[in-house]
Amino acid sequence: MNMIIVGAGNLGSSLARKFSDLGHRITVIEKNPKAASLLPRGRVDSGVITIIHHDGTTGAAMIEAGISNADVFIAATGKDSLNGLAAQRAKTIFRIDEVMTAVKDEGARTLYDSLGITTINKTALASDELVKTLTTEES
Image (tube, one colour):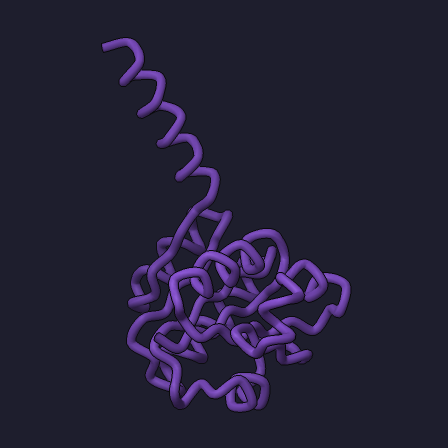
């Protein structure tokens, strides 16, 4: 599967590493060279992970990343507004079926979900997992 991930911070780098472990072709769009250094060097050097050093919200960066051949687009920057802009562009302009974004704000989550963009809230996931773990231990 061809995947584009916008953002090479902790979340984006972790996703790139895990999906490349599963044999997927990963392109990461990240304008900050320091953030891009979090990506596994060996996988970048071997071409398993490709880095595009641009603003991931722009159509030009998405085209350079090969969005016309992408199966999945994930916006994983630290900013809801940037994630939403990139995800909306991937979904509406480039017609990528599987578009996902990380969000912090519940209002943003509702908006993006209504546009057919799958949203993930890290805080909600962590709290759900902790509650599940604690209630399972009590049983």
